[in-house]
Image (cartoon, rainbow, N blue to C red; front, side):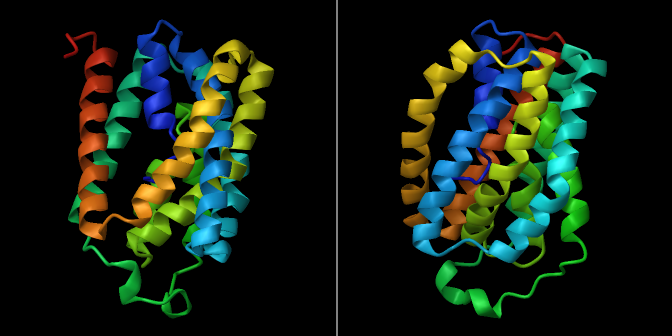
Length: 235
């Protein structure tokens, strides 16, 4: 529904269930591959993926994801939680302040994007993906909307780009021993079905409502993760 790959829910959920944060991030990275692929197929049918933008994002996001996964070996669990929460909070603010544009107000052929910025954004997105296990969508969606894509197209294009980013991060995490295969097997069926449902809901949701829901979800998760990282009581 939000073009984030699902990692923003998978990581805190696995951690809440007792999975150590580094393994939660690694398992999430692998799970996001299936979520984003399922979403991309659904959005392809809706003709809302901007393929050129998505491929440019993925081009630098893939090495970035590999680098981000490697960086997890040098960052403490509490530090990762705080970093994760702060990243989500920034995203919530950026999305909420952005003007909403309905898909029908602009044609894909009329969208103009600054393609020179995309590779840099893709690199940063990849690092965040590998480091936090969120698929990079927390960077992709705000970046694409900032560059001119309506949020529905940004969500769809982000889902497409995440397929490549999450795959790179998942491979590195697997080599580091951070992927819990037993949890992954249990997650995948629900993720595939849920991604199809989310794409369907997003298609029928007004841009303003989609943007508001995105911001609220990010804010709540951000507060929870920061509190956990700081060792404070979590509601």
